[in-house]
Image (cartoon, rainbow, N blue to C red):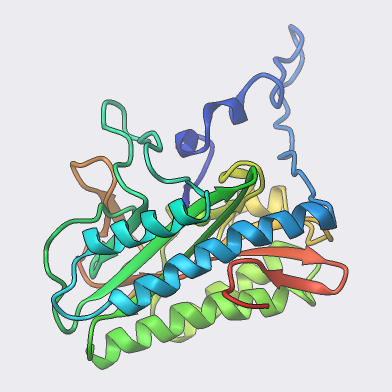
Length: 297
Ligand code: MG
């Protein structure tokens, strides 16, 4: 699940994140200086535990892939993923997640299912998927106290060429980012490559939502944008062994502008043209980047 970008819209990150511990009140008369995010590095043993959660997430998404046919519905995908989580004693991370919009209910499902112009955080329903649709499915779980989080966008039957290209470009944006982590020292270098690739293909990076650190909590520091921002330059992320990131480019065909629907969750493109979303949980190790949300090693 992607996290809202920026300090002002931080509520998708649990409130204890922005507590006094991280931002102590300055002494009277002192200048407030924003402290850099505190990143919890993981040991090889902890990364091995996160791989267990990642494997369950990958298994769930593999099952979703089989259900992505005309006539199926996203509620069926949600049920299938819930069953796989139960089978593995995995705690669903999205179910009952509090809404970032005041007064709106918590997230009611185990997966986010976002169809066509819906970018992220769509709520599964019983509407049959039709040939030519695309559906982004995002899910996460906790196993033995450690989290995994991943997303894929699937074509329902044959889709229009520009939509197939959208899926290919978004998937490649994720893959090029993972490869680049092996040779880049800072995340801004990776984000710059992602942004430039998407632009070169004539598409747009959605900027309102970002990836995130992940570990014992789904949303940990740092925020991981898919583009270079002033905030990223200010507090760049060093790609050192032990850092674990949920990397999740969201790409749209016609605009980067999005809005949240009245349900308090579903995010759609303002031009209502399609968008896609791919995500992996990736750990930096001394040997290089290691994807944790793959089915097999
Ligand atoms: Mg995520």
